[in-house]
Image (spheres, rainbow, N blue to C red):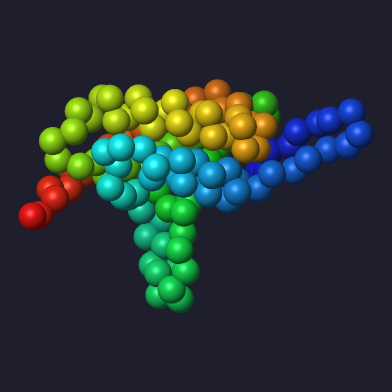
Length: 120
């Protein structure tokens, strides 16, 4: 279900994939985040097979009536404080969605799915 924004001169409809792309890109810019965990194995496998980048990977968008909930599934770097990384991701995603799309999410949930140890 797309997000609808009403303006004085009309209506703007934003697809969930657009919201997921902006949220995923913002999350990957955060210090300590090394990847996104896939929630849709088949869809993400197909995009990788065709060589396309999927910035919305690991992001689920739930829009019900006037409520917008963003779920982010991230992988963090070993040695970082997970609570600080998660808090930073929440703030950055909220900021990006408000400034880029004009969408204010009601909830931004972060699920840490793994820790990656950097070699070298």
